[in-house]
Amino acid sequence: MVLTELQKRKLKKLFDLYDVDGSGVITEADYEKMAQSQAKVQGYQPGSLEYNIICSQFKTLWKNLQKEVDINDDGEVTLEEFLEHKAKQLSFKEQYRPLWLERQSGIKTSQSYERSYEEDVIAKLTNLIFERLDVDGNGEISRQEYKQGFLSHFSDGNLTDEIFSKLDLNGDGHLSKEEVLQHVHDFFYSDDPEAPGNWILGPY
Image 1 (cartoon, rainbow, N blue to C red):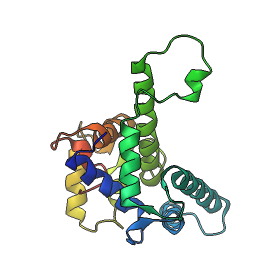
Image 2: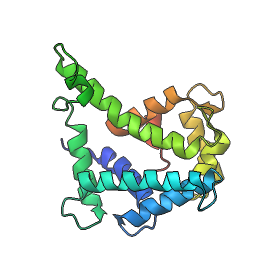
Image 3: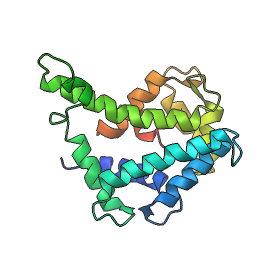
Image 4: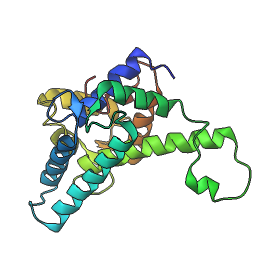
């Protein structure tokens, strides 16, 4: 699959969020910083059980990313490697065979494989967004939680309000799981420049 220019811009935004120190590559140190930031947002103190669990989770995420994306195994993920991996991911729909499907009997169509793969890609980023932003754990992201979560990435409060309003499709002041799932789908798969989901991770 050849990524469109809009997709490249959006995926560069995702890359930049992972590249916490702005070095131009994603490393284990970036994931350590993300873990520390997440623990701080949730009010966990260094050395606490909750803090250590988050650090362990992010360490596993890094190992998985490195295994899948770090082609030359140098401990760094470049933008080129990242975009190449995402292009393969997004074009891999019909070849994808989830293990849970292999364990079941019956004939599966290419559409079922495609749907399952899309759901997997979308669910991963959606879950990460809720883990980082849904501080009170009520299953919704409030305007304040969204603003607080992205404060370290862009400091313009008016901009975060503007973006949140784009994403809050029903105008109830919260982002539901359904809304975020739709936005994440559009972030990866839509080439419509007007799609609100383009903004799910901020300006691109």
